[in-house]
Image (cartoon, rainbow, N blue to C red; front, side, top):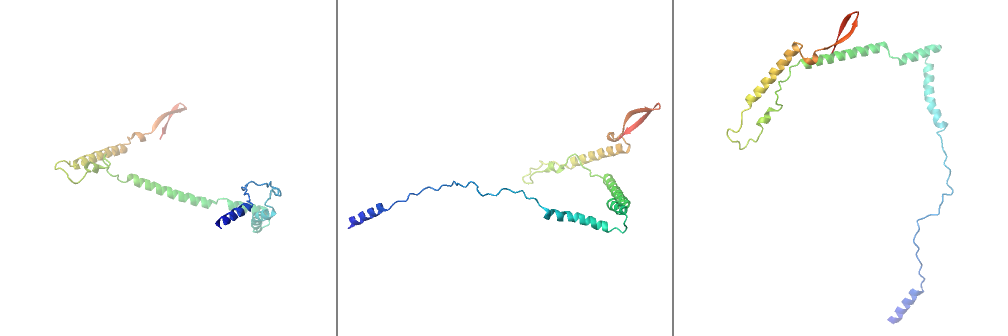
Length: 193
């Protein structure tokens, strides 16, 4: 029985027609038939008319505000609107003068204020910098006298510079004299500074 069943299954399988599967092609035969031609579209009057209406309306409004029919009055009023007024210029100049005077006062204040006495060492504590633990007796030097000496030298140097400034002997501030052309036989001296 089993033999017959197996034979029947084999016959049924062979009697079926096998469908051949073809692989899918991704290529297409479409060549663009029926595409519309590109049309260059402009903005048209629907955009340009409202855009032109705003400046034209503003100009018409300004012209209608005129109380006289004289066209020169309209032009002179437009010129006055766009020119700076003398009062504004005077006010601006006065404000600028006040600001410059205040800046000059501040500069004099900062330059005339006493400066800090700064020794040549920027960070004198670096000489005493070290671990506070396991310090051997006599291994550290007292730096107070060294710091005092540096401060004294810096103070004397500043005093020397201030004395030179008082006597007008600073080389960078002495004007340079050059020979100028002669005028009617006399030589003019021009100080450049």
